[in-house]
Length: 249
Image (spheres, rainbow, N blue to C red):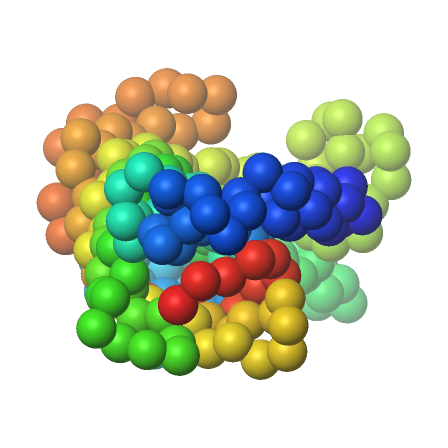
C-alpha cells in the first residue's frame, strides 16, 4: 500500500512538471488516481440454494454480499474526457450447520457432530474505460464499462471439527469440494466522483455485470458439464470508495 501511494505522488509531481499551462493538451483533462472500492453485489443464488438444501446448510441470502477491492485510472490527454484504468474486487459469504449422523451404537455413546460449511465467493477484474461528461461541472459523472475476467466459487466442507494430525491424514476429518465457474465479464457502469480536499475524491457508482464464455470445474480443475445456465456471475452491484490522485472535472 505504501508503494501504491508513492507511485500516485510521483505521478502527480511528474504531471505538474510536464504539463505547463501553455501545453497544447492542457485544455483536456489530465491526471489520474487510485484507491479503495467497497461494493455490494447481488448475484442470483436460487439455483445454488436448491443444492445447499441437500447439503444440509441454510440458504444463502438473496440480498447479496459485500465486496472489497481497488481501482485506478489515468486520463488520456490526447482523447478529451476519456480515462483508462483497471479494477478488481472479491467477496464471500458463508453458511453453516451442524448435523449428527444416525448409526447403530451402544446406548451410552453419542454420535460425533458433523460440521458442514458452504462458502460462496465471487471475484473479478479487468480494464476500465470511462468517459467523463463534459457538461457536468465541479464533479465527475462518467459512463463506461469494465472488460475482464471473473469467477464464482462454491466451497463445500464436511468434517468432524478438531482432530488429530494422524486422523486428518487417515481422512477421519471428513471431505471437501471446490466448484468454480470461470467467465468473461462485460459491465456497463455509471460513476460519480466528488472532489473533497485537494488530491482526495469520493466515488459512488453502479453497474450490471454480464458474463459469457463460462466453464465449470471442480477440485483440481476437473470439468463439470450440463451445469444450470442460471447459476452464473450475472450481477447488479453498487460501489463506493475513496481515491487519491490528480483529478480534472
